[in-house]
Length: 189
Image (cartoon, rainbow, N blue to C red; front, side, top):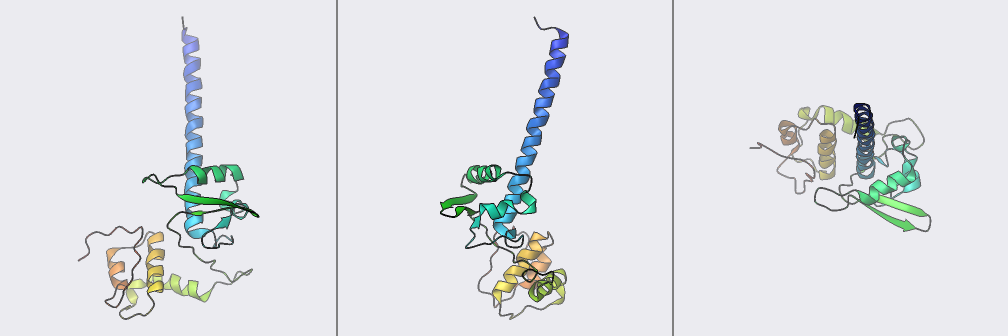
């Protein structure tokens, strides 16, 4: 028969176990979000060499965002992470010089905003940053570079500032290709 002291002790042990499980889940969720950012957008910006989306895992784990994780934890998350559509989020392959990883989809790498090995910002990045912050002040009608328009849209979206008004100010009748991957549209007239 279970006495009250044993029941209380088991209750405390159970609560401690739950706390550890939740702590582990939070840590894994954080790893997943960091990997998604790095393997889809930020690896190059964080100093990794990227070749068609592929990144050497040893380079990836040197990024400060992943400093609290081991190579095995990172590779484990890459090998076991699936989207809500039950498809792998990441790809990995073993090569003679090590294991390479990349996002299975949604790769839009941001360049490092600084010139190589300096703290001098690139003119393109400074200009795009200014345009993104003041997009309503510009007229993009007939603007010839659809890549830059798409880049501006995605930068504004990543900063959480894309509104239908801003999107409409960027669109023009001369655009032939528009990449709206990951953008949910409502109420555009």
